[in-house]
Every structure is written in structure tokens, then in C-alpha cells.
Image 1 (tube, rainbow, N blue to C red):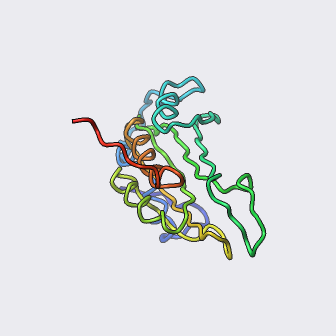
Image 2: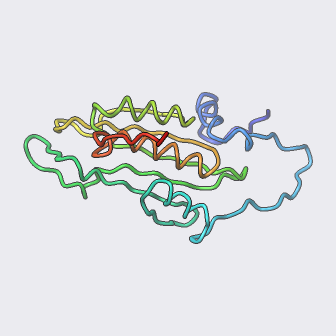
Image 3: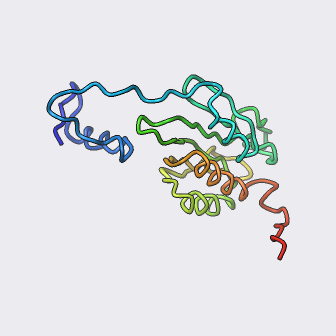
Length: 184
């Protein structure tokens, strides 16, 4: 694969930037450039957005070619050094869906979780074939202790939304809700 050098970027920076594309998008161009049809662009009425909202159980908002679902953590009473922090200050999980040029759906986002929820959320994301890119503290000196779990994924819309729904099950009030078993 040939790579053109970008001004100001060394070889090491290029090696970091190269893996950002999806597997299907990382096709090396042929020697003669060809005109390919434009990738489908989702719109505000994209049926996949309705699927995301239905599966996750929360509405989102379309922002251009991206659909954003925000899940506020209003179940937590967060304080920093004894002073209350309102949920509206950004204590929320956020998932951003968009269509890849390869036709698949992609999602980038993060979960804000209490420290005791973090491992279960990571396990659920990994089981849903999501890539956990980082995990670290969300704030400093806060109670309860909060973590931010960043992730990305690529698959069919329904599969991505179900993986996020399962990870959400390990947070907040749902975590302690009794599980219903299927009828036999």
C-alpha cells in the first residue's frame, strides 16, 4: 500500500492514522482513478435512526449525517468535593451513529459509569464486538467515583443498537432491577 507523505506528519504519525478506516474501506485504489457512485448519505428520516431509537429505548437527534443518542445519568447523585454536580453538566453517556462509506453502520461513543459498573459495561461491549478504545476517570475528587468508557463499533444497525442496549442494562436502575426469565 503506497502512502503519500502529508506535510508536517512523520512516519510514526502516519502509522497511527492508517488504522482508522474500516476493513472494507481500506481498499487500495487501482492505478487509474475510477469514478465510483457516491456513498449513501443518511437523512433525518433514515429508517435506521428509528431502529436505533426503538432498540435502545431512547430517542436521539439527527445532526447532519450523524444520529446522536444521549443517556443522562440522572440516577446518580454526583458531588465534587462535597458540592453537587447537576446531571445537565454533562454526566451522560453518548452514542453517535453514522454510515460508513462501505455501507455499514458505525458508532462512536462513551459510557459514563460508576466504578462498580465499568467491568460489566466493558464485558457487554466486547461481547457485542465493540472495540473499547479507552477507559479512565470521568472527574477528579467526585463521589461516587465515575469512569468513562470510550468505544467504537461497525456492523449492521440492529446489531450495534442491541450491543449498546445490553451494555446499558448494566448501568443505573436497570442494573439492580430483577431479571425476568423467559416463560418455559
